[in-house]
Every structure is written in structure tokens, then in C-alpha cells.
Image (cartoon, rainbow, N blue to C red; front, side, top):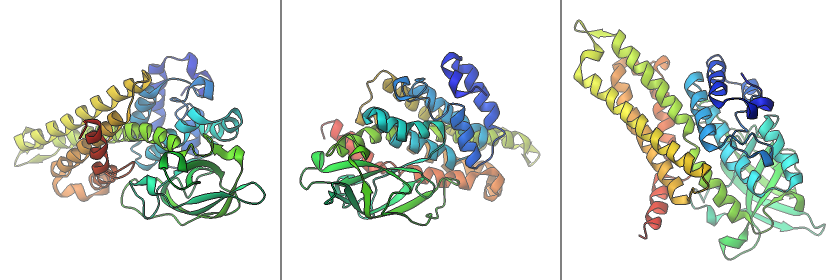
Length: 373
């Protein structure tokens, strides 16, 4: 596979073929994350001015889809996407040169893992009601207090992008984004949260007990947290489900193979209209989701992506993912319960897709407001 240093000078199609070949042999683990990063996957969407390869959003989504499809991994591509859109993207947009060197460069290179910490126990989709606070101490340094939960990559992250309230009143000016290293005084990382889906993605909680940060660690300036949040959500909602397309494609291919190979009553399953119709509906869901996501990626590459379109993409792809998984188990019948079919695991991933980066109901609200409702 092509090294990240020469990716700018390599035909992307050739690079993507190399990624597929490599991903088909990889296994879940820290070394796979580092290898994928060293070969350019994490840096695709980041502009060259920020240390990335500048290939764009469509290229990054194609790579995430291919990685998930060929590897069959669910959690790792999701975790990579979470870092790319909620950590790297706002860093590329708002960071100072020093912050790019200290925080963004190691994320792009895969020598550090990033986590975006916004969600709290009493403020799931309502991120503007955050209770975490940050105030200056007598020494002029910031002290963060509060707790965060459902932090993707939290248990293993080296760099945290944490939102905290620094003034009361309007959310537009009351939030600040802080860049915090894992070993920062006052940062306590909780136990990993068990979950039914997204195997391999690490989810956890944070406790902030006068966690120390300096002005040099503020992303976007004091009071700029809302802008950082909105920028992160615009890209995360649009593209967090790119790996799901790869998982759906893999599952469809294997389901078709199963339908052709298995016989009932002396006939292959693929000859029965009920099975054929299920597979066609699965193909329709995959095609529809893929068309929506890549049209959105092209909007992002053209700098015309807005929040309504991001929410529409997240809602549509997650809806089609769930429709796909409603059909999948019945292609296998009782065999769907066997781990090798991945039908149950994929269904859990589909259910989860309705809730992270804002629930489906929250996406509906944003879309409705865009329609003037």
C-alpha cells in the first residue's frame, strides 16, 4: 500500500486498491490503527495546509467504506471516523500553528488517538445545556470540572477535545473548547462502557476534577466552543456512517453467496421470490444510502455543505442501514444467529447508528427548522 508521504503524487484509484488489498488481511488492534494512519487513511480529508494530504471528503469516505468492507471490522472504522470528523476537522479549521503541531500532527500520523468529549449524563442531544465548567484559577490557568460520557475512543485516547461552559447566558458565547492531553492533572478516565454493537470501538467516560489547561490549549479562543461544536457536528453527522456502507456491501455480497449456495426443497434459495425480493430491497437501501452520502461529500468538497444537509444525510443513511438489517436475518433463517453471518452484530450496529451524533429525532428537528417549520 502507498505510504502517506507519496499519496499526493499517487493516483487515488491505485491507492484505494492498495488499501482494499491491505484491509482484507488486517486484524483489529493498535497496530492496524497505526498502519492505516501511516499509509494515509486518517489524513485524506485534512488540507495540505494543516498537514494532511488534501484528497478531500469524498476520497476519505471512499477509504472508510473500503476499509470496513474488506476488513469486516465495525468498531475501528467508526472510531477512526469519529476522530477524523469530530477532532481532526475542527483542529484543521480553528487551530493555531502550535496547536496543529502539538495536537493535529500526531492524530494524522496515528501516533496519538483523539476523542471528542461533549455529551454529558443529562445532556445527550441537548449539547447546549452542558454543565461542565471551566474557570481561571489564581495562577491564570483554566480549571475544568464536570463529567462526560459516551466518549468514543475515551478509554484509549491520548488527546481530548473537551467542551465546557466558561460564562453563563447565551450558548453562542458561553462555551469554550479545550485540548487536553491524557496525562493532564485533574483528568480521570473512567472504565470502558460495555455495549452491544460497534465491536472494537472503545467508549468511556471522563471526570474533570479541576483539570488543568492553559490558554495555548483553547481551540478557537475563549467563548468559541459553539463554533467548534457546530463545525464538528456538521462533518460528523454527514460522514460518520461512511464505514456502514462498507459493512452493508460486505453483508449483501455474502448474503447473495449464501442464497446461491444453500438449497431448500431441492432448489437454491436464490430461486425463491421472497429471498430475491429481500436481497433487492437490501441492494436498494445500500444504493440509496451510498448515493446520498457521496452527493453530500461532493458538497463538502465544494464548500457548500450546510447543517440541514448533514442531518438529512445522517438520518437517511441510518434509516436505510436499519431497513437493510430488517431484511438480512431472514435471508439466513436460523443461521442468522451464528456469529459467522454477522447478521446480529450488524443489526446492533444499525440500531446504534440512530443515536450517535444526535438521535434521528434530533436530525428531524434540524431538518424541519431548515424547512421553516
